[in-house]
Amino acid sequence: MTENTNSSANFIKHIVKEDLAKGTHQEIVTRFPPEPNGYLHIGHAKSIVLNFELAHEFKGKVNLRFDDTNPSKEDQEFVDSIKADIEWLGYEWDGLHFASNYFDEMYRQAVLLIKKGLAYVEDLSQEDIRAYRGTLTEPGKESESRSRSEQENLDLFEKMKNGDFADGEKVLRAKINMSSPNINMRDPVIYRISHATHHNTGDTWCIYPMYSFAHPLEDAIEGVTHSICTLEFQDQRPLYDWVVEQCDIETTPKQIEFARLSLTNTVLSKRKLKQLVDENHVDGWDDPRMPTISGLRRRGFTPDSIKVFCREIGVSKADNLVDVRMLEHFLREDLKLKAPRTMAVLHPIKVVITNYPEGQVEWLDADVNPENSEMGTRKIAFSREIYLEQSDFMEDPPKKYFRLFPGNEVRLKHAYFIKCNEVIKDDDGNVIELRCTYDPETKSGSGFTGRKVKGTLHFVEATQAVEAEFRLYNSLIEDDREGNDFLDFVNSDSLEVAKGFVEPNMADAKLEDKFQFFRHGYFNVDSKHSTKDLLVFNRVVELKSSFKL
Ligand code: ATP
Ligand code: MG
Image 1 (cartoon, rainbow, N blue to C red):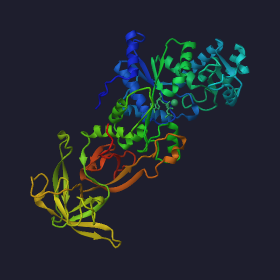
Image 2: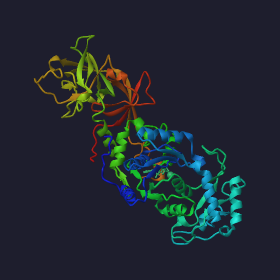
Image 3: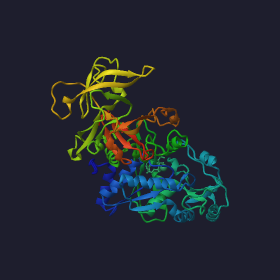
Image 4: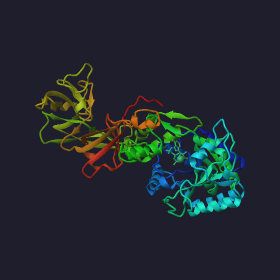
């Protein structure tokens, strides 16, 4: 599963191949440029896989660059989590950069633009700038500031830098074309004032470059050849090219856009994910219901399942909505041969095998993974007392119910046939215990063919069982619309906590170990809530899905 299974070339690969063939570049350089204002999500993973694997395939380089030009929202916590998530996915970056380390250079470039008559300091307020900008059908209007002299612009820009103005009092704009059909080209703001402490540069600066000016410069400074971003930046490409052309730089990075990942029943926007965290709809950025890399990791997704998913969904120019069950499909594929099989009873009911000798514990053999014999065998305990799943018993079953009911016989996985003879209830009439008998002749693996039973149930022997907690998840978001009303669709019933038992050998399970619980699905040992005394398992996915690839 670790190799790239999708050999079909995407359109970006074609561009890269052509550029190398034509000699436009000797070596390609890509970058992944997150803003450290939140944790990475599965959409970012798509971009990471694309950028890192493109660079690797063509023996180029890939940079991790923190696009930290907005001091108010950025934080070291996010820088650390982003690095850890990329490493966990299994990628190594060549260069590690911070856009904020280029602030001197960006300032120099802005001054050069002023000197070339291509930038000016604007007095208008943000609202007026917007009003002057015009619409899709009407050209914009030039402001008075546009005709300032070079010297005046240089003086004012320096004053902006020195902190002589309040936030919003002035901005620096590129002087391009107020009647351009592309609104992005109508003298966009390229520097703004913000008296905020920056996570990297502290209080050194009180002016900060805007994304559309900073990004092409960052790419150019690093010698990035192919600057891959999502479709919403398509209309900004002329501005990107304008900055590259007008600034004093040697290299010419090329912006290429692709469709961002959208997933059914999933919010993929840092702003909204932050809201879910800040308003306590979830237990942090790494809550197993979150589509963040750290949430998926805690839930039990593997790096391989995420990477294969990202490769298989492909890279295109057309927006599409991917079924979240596709990601689950690749997790099952990945774990099928790797995860040990074991039995867990999530909602236990006690069963006494009345004809089994008291005090005796028997150890039965079972495969660790019937689909992968190399994983060997394990020992399963059996005795007079076991736990079954409450839902595997019915006192008055409907027709065609093949599990346990009074008088019926079922097979216990890896053990014996048992037959239910008696039902014990508490004062309120709840079933609290079952009395059964077993047939020693029917031992699993003994070749018994005397009679057949229709139901096979899992169980855990009671005296050796390890107590465990199980966290069962439903979709956090009940709708596919990604509107601002997404909080209306938060599922209040997305987590069920059950307390039950697992096989004795599970006492050695380590954090993030993954298992397939017979009939229940794939589970992961939770890294946050498990303690020395209590294993907590997150259900990653159930075993079956109606989803077909
Ligand atoms: P969000 O929309 O979640 O706030 P963003 O684009 O603002 O994301 P950045 O930190 O700027 O977040 O993103 C870093 C890189 O990841 C960018 O190149 C961006 O295009 C890419 N990216 C973000 N979201 C997705 C997505 N859903 N699918 C593919 N790529 C994405
Ligand atoms: Mg962004």
